[in-house]
Image (cartoon, rainbow, N blue to C red; front, top):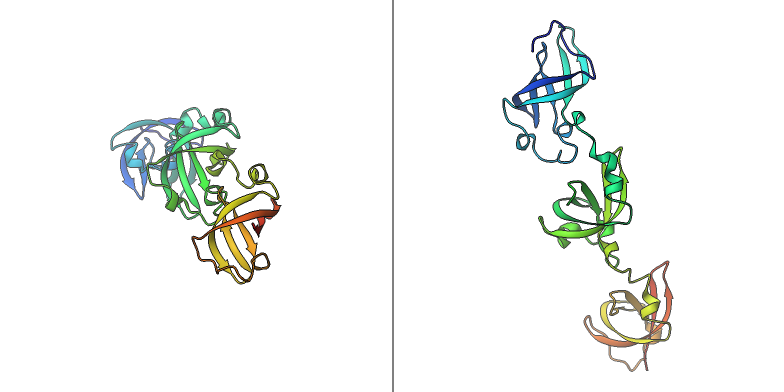
Length: 253
């Protein structure tokens, strides 16, 4: 594997051997004066999140392609190589495999500050943002809703082949209670709500479908006993604003 040139050219396909691991990456002997660096994200198209030692071992021989060469003044060079680029890129067909709006099953792999990373059955990973967890709870967090290893179903929202990114929604696998509210609770209909919280201007009640409406204090008779969280109250639907997600309630007589 020796070569008279001090380093290869970008695009060269060659065979190298894993000789060491350093800072989460692998160093390869590629037969030139300089060793080559193989990072985890250049090893696999899909499983780059796993430690590189779970993919390759010392003395493994791989065919790689040179992706970067930075010559040094001493005749050596900093060389980077890619193993995955010697293989077909599955992201070229990711949008066909996961069309926008399609359902997919996956396993919760780990949590990040703003959501969860799901490993889909296809091997691709998808981000489920906290904002895509619940129709009713804007403060919902993936780390509180799911467990590592839990299998869930999601709806595909975005497939970006260039950035190798998939976004998915958990809440879209269920009916949006705000979008269908009037189908179940027409204006003037009577239902029962549970006191969710109290405010100076009224009482917020959680209705049977999970939506929260306001019973303004002007709708409560002076003779009515004060409400407490958890109380059941029979109310009438007075008004509904789907855009602002507001429900005005009245006390059913």
